[in-house]
Image 1 (cartoon, one colour):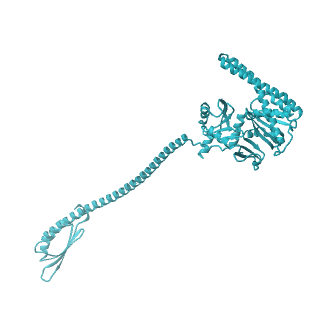
Image 2 (cartoon, one colour; image 1 turned 90 degrees about the vertical axis):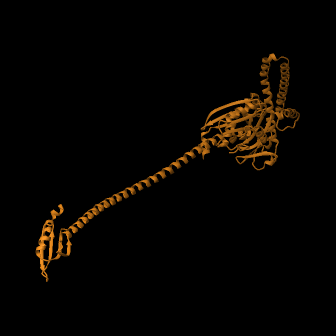
Image 3 (cartoon, chains in turn orange, purple; image 1 turned 90 degrees about the horizontal axis):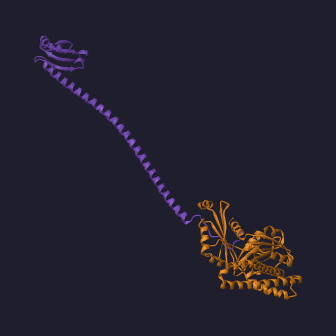
Length: 331
Length: 173
């Protein structure tokens, strides 16, 4: 009773952590009497947590006992299944943690990765761990219910892909760019070699061929520049400004490269969906992209030109969506 | 609506600071309450004592009244006793005087002392002895004196002397 009264007096602090390859973004939202009184975001150069980040988080957690720390799950072995019961049909049940959503879908992740997250953030504690698929579903809820389409959530190194036919989940996959970067290049070559490939027609192959060459070239260019940069760093520290300029120049090339990787991953995933007999195959013409990283127009171009997909890109603030999930979970 | 893989840690508004604050306040309030109860008890006891004292005062006043009444009564009694004593001594003197009045030749057989008079019965050898030796002093004392004689066998007289003092002169006396 006293706790309930005190709860209304205290403000709620939502701390949302999104970790990337080399940095973590902490988004803090302080909700006081139903209204957002403070919201800010800060990045830290750590994959998990460092002293500065700990200090920053503690600053807000000490503000109210009602603080909630939310982490976005980045486990490589996670997914989204169209059933709550026959999970074993799709994945090995033994080492995963599943949750049933809306009595028809299952979200799953590696049990160890949850333990790892808890261990990594033990200094601040963790209250919620959300799957990126939950965020994707929430973000495109209106489209999921009415369309047959592919839904993508683009993160820095990951892509959450799900295919819905009027709210019926057909297929979902969590794609890791780092893990597949080498494989995808290799795969691309094999696709080029294989004439009997089902997912791509000859035109696609030709287009891929051209793009693939470009991609490889750009990769090579990039690596050359990096070599040059590193060489300059060692030899002439005084020319730091030039180094910065050259890095800025690299970004578009890097983006193109990254977008191409993404495209290949998406293409592979869709191909897997069409070939996997466990999933109900439907011909998909539309793709909705929730973009949290400001992708270049190239990915859209690839998807439109090479897969003939109708592409809709919508910007998403991952940290705010994560915060909204935590608020929703509390209700 | 459960989308999180883990359950949130239980949050309580009763942090250590709040708990300390509550403990402090509850102890303070407890002490205040105990003091209040103590004061209430004291007040109750005081009221009780007050009522007792008032009752005692009433009783004492009542007993004083009774005592005063008793004192008055005793004083009255004392006055009365003094009067009675005085009267008795007066009477004693009177009787003594009376017997002193009676000469040796006259024998009294009965004397009745009344509120306002004296009746004497006796024997006298003759009327003159009586008239000169007894009636004369009696007349000087009493306002009205009546005498009657009855002759007896040996020639002597039995007499009855009735003497009265009038009311006014009695008061004066």
